[in-house]
Length: 493
Image (cartoon, rainbow, N blue to C red; front, side, top):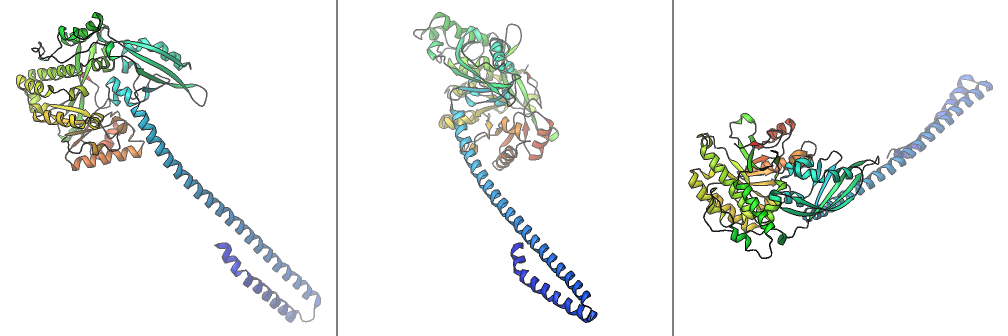
């Protein structure tokens, strides 16, 4: 634009220079009269001055035109880069969605382990196979995830992978009662820009066949001393083709429960802020006591319980133990209105006998259903809509609450809860963990909390590990927080 203005006035500038030169000559002649030397000298000076100004104006115009051309080229390049970036972002979003869909639907377990042995990524298959929440996996050492005994069996393979060696092997994992499940495992080392190993991908496929494990069917015989139904020896041995050894493995699992080898831990679910006057609640966790006295995390025994159909039996035991314990406590359990959150298995949700068992146990122990809250995962809600609806309706009739765990991980999480009456939304720990550094995750938390308040549902943030996150959650208005930054798990007793 500046170049156009300069070009428009350039003609007038030349005319002004000529007029100025003529005027100067006339005045010089007039004042010097007939002194030709002065006239010639002054005329030369004026002409030189005019030519210098004309040359300077020409250079300025040329420089301005060059700068304008450069600016135009830069603007075009910037516009091209903006279009390219938008196109790349669109393609990345589409690719990321497809990759996430594939990643989350694969039956193969995928884990990325850094060079210190900590889990930095895992997919849904791994999480569901271990029956662990994301906050009990993300950033944890493999020893914490699998348990010390199970980790000892793969420790050498882990070290070899961290030394840069790819591995492919079949792993036999022993669990409670010497039961065995079979994994096909592959380690793929990952190298950084400096050529050093930054970690490795742990890929595992569960190739255990159901026929290789004892099959348990529901029993209708009288309750055991624990008030829960256990399969009879006749029912275990009724499965054709099962060896005595395999049958004994299942019996050992049940015996471990009845002999008190399983124990319950709890983790504080703290109100925000702490002095808000709201009641603190507790999440219930299951641990297995090893012979040497160490605690085994759920990932070491849940797969066997699930494959053999024992998860409902285990959940029955958890409910029985909590209510028995609560019945022996002072009146404060009822007075302070604390709620104990129990994460129920998919098989338990589909167990038609569970609601009757729950109501009978509440009556026997003289406890109100309001002290229990059953956690249902978003995946169960999406995959088994009718079954979950019946489960929620049944336990609510017993006076219990319902929480949806891992909420917000799916884009359409609120669509999944349409028509369901829930009391708590437990916001996915992965979102909470990254909300300080990721504005998208922060926006998700704000949006979830705002919508939850409109529909009268309380929010719980999972995987809270720092004071900075706590402060931000209070600022947003989240109701409760749970995580190692709030309280570590401790024995219920």
